[in-house]
Length: 261
Ligand SMILES: [Zn+2]
Image (spheres, rainbow, N blue to C red):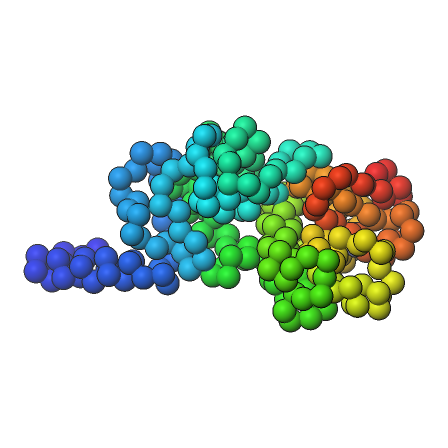
């Protein structure tokens, strides 16, 4: 900033403070240079993001909605074959997921979510809380209101949000190249219309069908194992030679025989 008379500077700072008090300010600080913990400069009143702003550091033992919001964002970092609970309780699995997220983005990997971690998340999310490279529209080509599935519309939409954050983690791990999503949530009638399985996870909002993109079906299926997908169906599994299906939810079922899965 250039030198200014002190009165002007003070009024400018006051204006900036007001601007940052709104919900539209975007995080632009270099996260790698920010202190991870103990910063008094991140005030509880400052809304850093249009979707959700964390007001304090979270660590193992923390609990509540702030933790639950964090868990959604790091759901794609559970470790191979695992899935983390989105339950608002910051336990060892959440700590490990936060650590993997931090490592993936070159942050100090200590499993404690502080300003640097939150700054990175703010960079990665849109104002509707979806990760920047995925949209609710991509995850629902069936209807506009998420109704008619096996769970409430709100639950289906929430499940799709978690699926998107898993896909964002997978996308980053695969070199940040676009991942093609050809569909996700299906109402019961949409599922019937496409001949989906009777208890398809598409009806819960958990599932996404991926196009080959630049990665190829097998590379997508293989990578999905590392990012919280409990159901992976790909080439060699009946009906899945033309897409890779990934989904969350309870119980593991992976089958893509042509890909060694
Ligand atoms: Zn599918």
